[in-house]
Image (cartoon, rainbow over all chains, first blue to last red; front, side, top):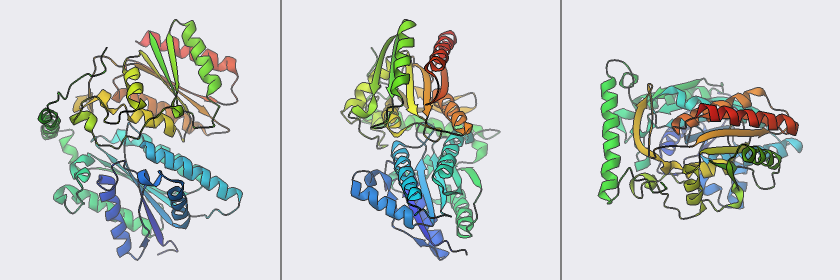
Amino acid sequence: MTGLQRVLLLVGSPRGKRSTSTAVGSYLMDLMKQKGFEPMTPQWIGPTLKTQEKISQLFEAVDAADIIVLAAPLYDDCQPYIVIKAMELIAVHQKELAKAQKKSDGKLFSVIVNCAFPEEHHTQTVIRIYRKFVEDVGFHWGGSLAIRAGEALRGREGKTLDDAGFMAKKVKEALVRRADSLTEGSPSADETMSVIPESFSRGFFSFLGSFFIWLSNRMWTKQAKKKGEDVSARPYAL
Amino acid sequence: MKALVLNGSLEHQTCLMPIQDILESELSSAGWECESLLLHRFKVGTCIGCFKCWDTTPGICFQDDQGREITKKAINCDLLVFLTPLTWGGYSSELKKAIERMLGLLHPSFVKIKDSYRHKKRYETYPSVLGIAVAQGERDNEWDQIFKTLIARHSLNWHTPAQRAEVFRDKNEDEQIQKSIKSMLAELGEMK
């Protein structure tokens, strides 16, 4: 183990505690605690941005952390608004610290991206954005984990990874690898994995993937219908 | 032909205004009816990822604020311009806040197009997208590439008929910017 000790989880899901980002991030924090690291109080970015006092607390937490793990969903091919806002604020804060020569070196910044789509290319752009942010503010890149088809973990229903059963098996394994590399203080690799088997997206078993998509599409139609609505309504059509 | 310019300047940031002026002038010269919105002056709540715009009031966000008006304007224009300070290759927070409120413009169902899943169209047609970012100070060129990729990817998911993106430096001459915008507008017209 190196001198790195305190690890801060930033949750960038606008859904807050009932989110896959929370489920995945919390699991990683438990793993790091088992390895003797000290998880700090997690920061849910959405509520944090609401007052200046909480933003100051966010800065204090970022300043005090040795490792920062951001867990956030993919929205419109990039970070959610609340994450961009937090990044903008942290960047200004880091630059003020640098001016005052108070900036600490060696802070690792690692990212977990949760994406609803199963294909790899959806998450590549946002990882590049995060990398540029890390370079710009003077952190060190701590690697990334892109989780695809993350909806299957049902984090937005408040499920933990343990609740998700076999669906979470590969995610948990990836998080163990992430915890290992972060606790060794080594810049970990960028990894991407799908919650549903890759063969469901392409190849012989792709019909199973199509079946899951059909089920999901049917669920949206039924949910809207239950509320007396047409899922395909065009309210803004002129 | 209507164009809607979404200006994602942060409060107190003025670097995008000269480009907005050039853009408006070029659009007008090319016969477009143009409206520009300085987003930070609008009351737009944050998307909370509740998906009510998909299953409860399909196509409409539950938050009754100016986010709804912007969304309605966006789907009813022919060209949507994302004007933003270049933010590590991505959008500014102000622009992204407005974009997220447009989730209901897409259908919740997935559809496979060319080996990739995307959300289905809710509407018959979607506007073309022009992404313009302004980099302040010296920035490495990878930021520019990221922005262009982001606009291309975002446009695919949005089913836009045509897209173009460019990054300007705050030190670029007006004439150079004007020429580039004129050329992109012409290309977008041909691509449609």
